[in-house]
Image (cartoon, rainbow, N blue to C red; front, side, top):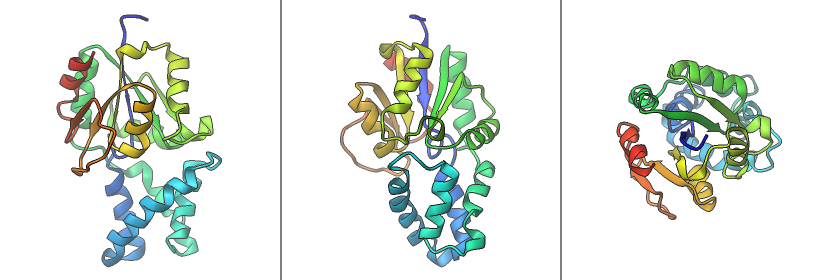
Length: 213
């Protein structure tokens, strides 16, 4: 519908504390003294495991833990922990306010259906739809999430904004597609291309969305 405004969100790292969830599990398996090193290695290993789009996210996480040297009996622990990961403190209020202002909300996530359903329950705010990598055979930064979103919703591109924390997985491909972006730059990173807007957290996302559309 021409009058609808749509905001799409990445989930893990943007709405759900992805680094915190992974860090806790890595500390449990490898010890607190190795957690920083292993978290950096996880960030390096995961994109390669996602590259061909063939694995479920559960398998990506399990294979990543194996590459990090987890004992066989601990390899699935990271995936098993994901449904318990918590939203960022400001996530729910920000999403509720965006909905109150008439924004339709969707999630575009590099994950599996059961994981995203568990995380949406934790967030506690309704979404119109969620598109997940394992159902479309593609992980961001591929473009297929956005293609599926526009195909399913008919959302007008000039009334859409994408909100995400990962510059590599989200801001870069959304910019390639000519879309407006809000980069939730929680860690003070510096990357090109520049997003349409940059914020330190989700608190003022509703205002930024209204400014853009």
